[in-house]
Length: 78
Image 1 (cartoon, one colour):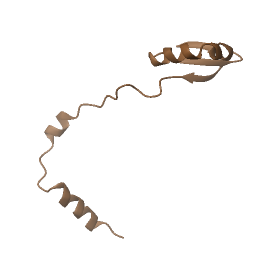
Image 2 (cartoon, one colour):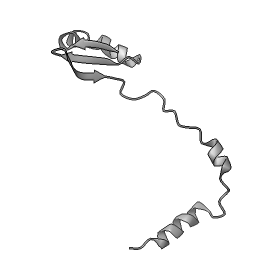
Image 3 (tube, rainbow, N blue to C red):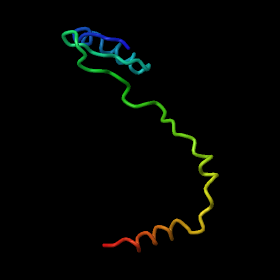
Image 4 (cartoon, rainbow, N blue to C red):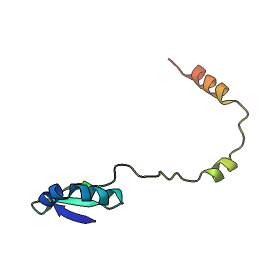
């Protein structure tokens, strides 16, 4: 993690954005205290947990999803 003051941030903004895009985190200091943190806007790839073992352990459904939704709607009290 890199720290930089406000004046240097103004002078080196393009370089700082390149560093953030490369995965670095930058803390901007104002009067020696942390004021802001620059991080990447979005992760490049979202990693989901592997659920294949869970899906394999579940028994197959006897009803279609359409019928399940209709039953749920019918049971709902208005």
